[in-house]
Image 1 (cartoon, rainbow, N blue to C red):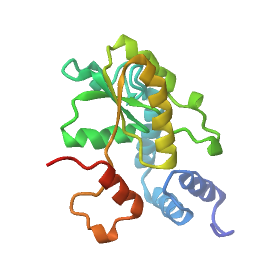
Image 2: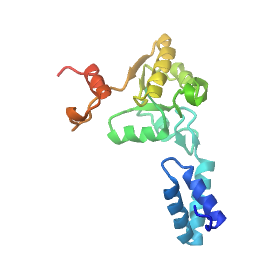
Image 3: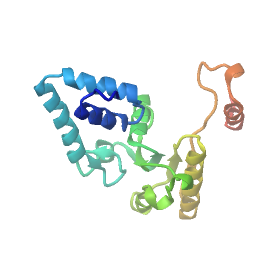
Length: 200
């Protein structure tokens, strides 16, 4: 921000800029917007931040974010606790739940293995996943990490740990999106579409 901007406003913008997907220009707009809010609105905003940060924690089973010891999905006896879908972040669960098709439970890793970034297997929630296998009579683990280098490496690493335990490990199929056009698909997407083809 310009040198003539009040220092508290500069600091506020810098804090907003630390959020993912927020560049400095957006951060400045947000900071100026906060200045147009009433004292009550600012207090409510600050209280919401503090309240969420202090009361939301990880579910002791699946590591999803929740207010209680267990999240609503893990508490649901109608869900198939023998099938675990492994995802990278809590927001990935929302994507699956929108389909209204998946009836199993989840496990959130809170990251992916990435040695370049210093993220080793012990820094994500793999041991918590392993502890669930015998306890919950798990028969299938679906690896639903993104089809990136880190996502594939994490899926393969976890698969190698689970295979000796007699658990079926599957991977999400990746390929052409519904409504997609072959002409615009990249080589990796086309390869995955061919590799994951099904009989009709």
